[in-house]
Length: 260
Ligand code: NDP
Ligand code: 8X3
Image 1 (cartoon, rainbow, N blue to C red):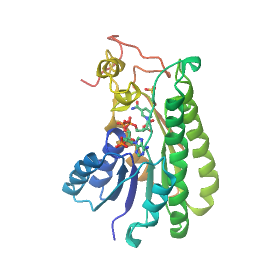
Image 2: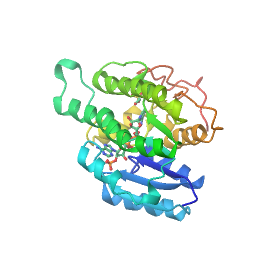
Image 3: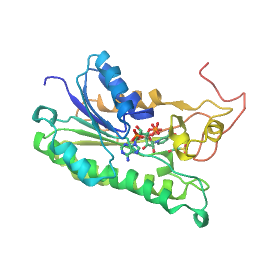
Image 4: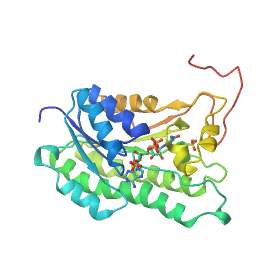
């Protein structure tokens, strides 16, 4: 295959889907995964229409053996992965510690930390063998700061930040680049997932200010991976202008510039 190959986890919606689209437009072929089979087909159709070759797989990244067989069973020509976007992740709930839901905690830790590690563990040897590659990890402003009741989600994203730095330290000598992307509030399915399908609660998160959209992050990812090979963007913290810090959103203030 002459085009470069990118693997995007959690490409069925939001930032992952937008990133897969941006990469297809830039000429990449795509390996995409997520748990929702119907959505994967929709995204695959979108990417094919943009001229990309697409390989799809329904995978729950929390499941170690699913991740192992996903990567092991890639056809040889698809194992030449140039870019891994470790995007799949979620927040579940927004409670104080004492009232925290342990299933939510497990889900966040299993997905955001362990799932990211399982995928990375399987893809890194392929990149090492090819002596090239770029790993993009989706952290969050919640991995740089904390906010009220963000507790375990913030903990998982702080872990992603630490793992990103460790990966970079270890892989630089092999010419493999590692970048952490840390967005503030991006309107995706994120809040709908966090509030377990409560649309009203999810919509309130984005009221009265101009949030980021998935393409803002996808464009930044494309910019990071298209720098000259001697340039690594270590870390990007990308915030809505109206969100100067984690958990602090300036709503309904005419002084904050809007794009339209
Ligand atoms: P979405 O909910 O829109 O997308 C999340 C994606 O992750 C979906 O494609 C989902 O697919 C996938 N996913 C979740 N769990 C699993 C799993 N166990 N196995 C495989 N895929 C999974 O949210 P975003 O696009 O906003 O989130 C993408 C990343 O960006 C996350 O890591 C999030 O923490 C991070 N982020 C988001 C911010 C925001 O404000 N939106 C801000 C900062 C960081 P499916 O359900 O089909 O499995
Ligand atoms: C999510 C970032 O600020 O919306 O990772 O909680 S924020």
